Length: 228
Image 1 (tube, helix red, strand yellow):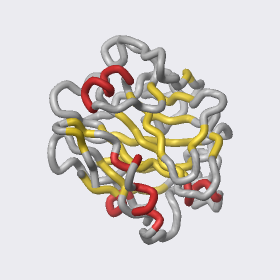
Image 2: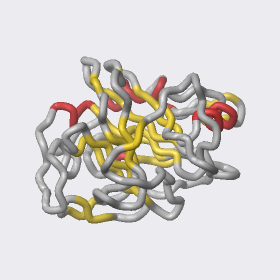
Image 3: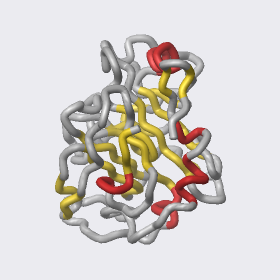
Image 4: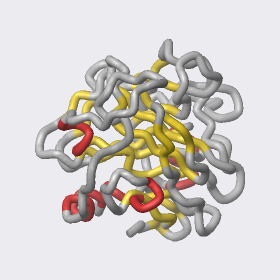
């Protein structure tokens, strides 16, 4: 359940996600999770991180202007901290594509039972939602025009050259480790082919300004996420 300060929406799982998901049902695993990415890969991996490190919330369509307002939350459901230095996060599932993938800086980690938020723009998120994100995507005109010196940036990665802009009509979010093993992959609105599989998408938002929040761990985004 999301809590908010007046009309401000804040990432939900800082308070409630870990306990809720710990009690949820885990069935199978995520598509191509834990496997080095290739267009032909179709196996579910057994990497322990697949069961503990998940994309937990996606806000892609805010009330009013979307510019700078988007964010992605990642949760560590495990009992140990996870070093995510060099991990890649973004919306480009194809190497060399035109969307964005960026790397976490050295020393980045998620404590056990905690989550982190990566904002499109830290300063815009602070103003709109009244919270401070843990990281922000690099400065770019329109979507992150002013760098926040208090919040570390993700850095450019060789995987893709674009900017992370989560499309309101459907997109996907990809998390990979330094060796390009897929840790989590979440399409929304439109089912998509990824790693040789058709991956079911999280549902569209029920109401403008809500976010997609993970409530279950079945590996099927159409079941795991709700609009809240």
